[in-house]
Image (cartoon, rainbow, N blue to C red; front, side):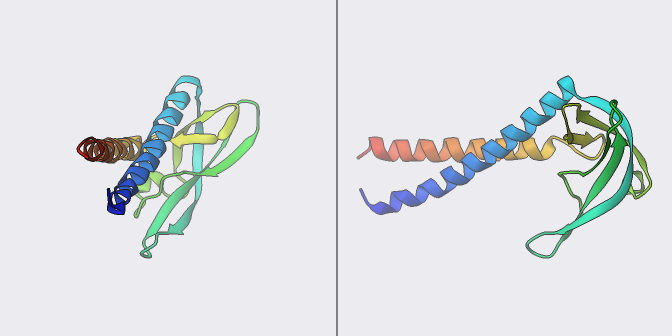
Length: 141
């Protein structure tokens, strides 16, 4: 067997990483849905991060007070290219957070599991597809 088949492991590794990212995000959302509590928060600013090609992504920073009186202010893990009025600075939003770890939170209406589901699906296709091709190649030797 030639060494060229080793290059087929590249999509396998990428697929496994995508699969892990998607599964982690969905698990996090499930936990927040089960044990999370809601609070009224205010968008105090946007963290602007630049992508590799120079694109700007706005991550709203939500500030709220937990039930035990702790003040929190964290940036959303998801960024978007534009920000609507509903999530502009000064807007009031609802957050769902983990009472044991308030940095684990979602802004309702902003954060979504669509990206996590996309990574999970793409990771599954790459991982299973590559594994099937490599296994088929090994069996036909």
